[in-house]
Amino acid sequence: IWIVLAVIGSISLWAAGGKPVSPFSEELASWPFLDMWARWDAQWYDRIAREGYFFSATEQSSVAFFPVYPMLMRALTFIGFGPLTAGVILTTFLGALAFVLFYEWCTLFAPATSARFASWVLALWPLAFFIYGAVYSDALFLVLICGAFLALEKGNLWLTVLLGIVATATRPVGPAVVIGLLARAIELRLSRKEKLRIVDFLPALAGLGLAAWMAWQWSRFGTPTAFVQTQAGWNQTPGPSTWFKINWLTGDRFLERLPRSLMHLGLALLMLAMIPRVWKRIGAGYAIFVAIIVGLPFISSIDFIGLGRYAIAAFPALFCFALWLEERPRLARVWFPVSAVLLGVCVSKFAIGRYIS
Image 1 (cartoon, one colour):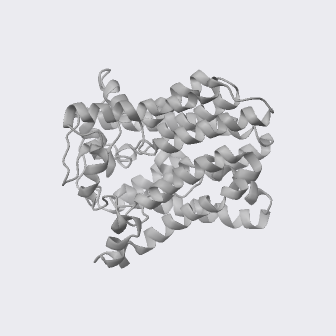
Image 2 (cartoon, one colour):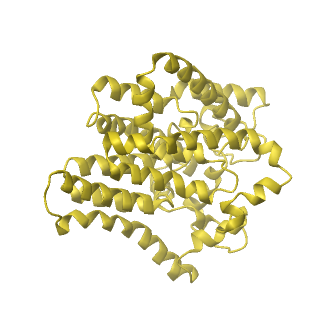
Image 3 (cartoon, rainbow, N blue to C red):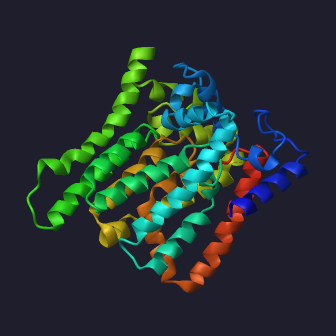
C-alpha cells in the first residue's frame, strides 16, 4: 500500500508540474515519492528539529507541536539524515509497527481472522496515509497507545506507564490516554472481583509526559499552557466561537471547506457512534478512552478538518466498527472500495499541497 500511495502522490506531483502548490522544503524535491510526504505540519516539525521551539500568544508558533516526534527526527540527523528524510523514515517504520501492535491487540478480543479484517479497515482508512509516511506524529502516537493498552492487558504496568508517559508528550490529547489507561486498569481489577490496589492507579503516572512538557514551557516561556495559547494563531482559541464552530460557519471560506469538513465530521461521528459497542464488546475503559480522544479534538477543532485523522487514534472504536462491518459482507464490499478511493484522492491532494488535514 505504501508503494501504491507513493506512486499516486508522485504522479499527482508530476501532473501538477513537479512542485506542490505551496512552497515546501527543498530537502526532498528531487525525490517525489519521498517529497510527497512532507507537507503542511511537516514544515513545523522540520523547523523544530533544526532550530528548536519558539512561542507567540498571538501568532502561529512551533510550541503547538509536542516534542517527542521532532526529537526523534533530530536524533536521526546525527547519523546523516536530513530532518524531513528522518521524518519519512520514522513514520514508515512506526506505521508498520503500529499495524503489528494493533493486530496483536485485536487478537485479545477477537479471532485472528477478525483481527486481520480490522487491520485492513485501518490500512484503507481514508486518512491512513498519515501513518504510512507523512511527516506527522500520528504513527508514533498510535504505536505508543496500542503498545500501552496491550501491555496493560498483559499485566505489564510499568511498560504501560512508560509508553503512556511518552504518548502524553507526543500529542495534546494526553488526558484521554491517562484517563483511558486508568479506567481500564481499574476495570480489569474489578472484573476479577478483587479489591482495588494502589498499583492499579499507576497508569495515572502516564500524565508525567504532559506535565514535563508543560513544566518546560513554563521555564522557557513563562507559561505552562503556551501550546494552548498559541492556538490563537490558528483562530481556534478555546471558547464558544471554537466549540460551536462560529468562525467557520460565518467565514468567507465556509463553502470551500465544506466537503472536507463533512468528510472529517462523518468519520469522527462514525467513531463516536461506536462507543456503545466498544463499551459492550471490550469494556467501559476503552469506551471512555474513545469518547475523550475523539471528543477533545471534536470540541477544539475550528471546522472539523482533522477529525478523520485524529480518529485513527480511537483504535478500539475502529476495531468495533470492523467487527460490525465484518458481520455485513455486502456493506463491507461497498466500504472498502469507497474508503480506498478516498485514501487515494486524499494522498493525491496532500502530495500537491492541498490542505487535507
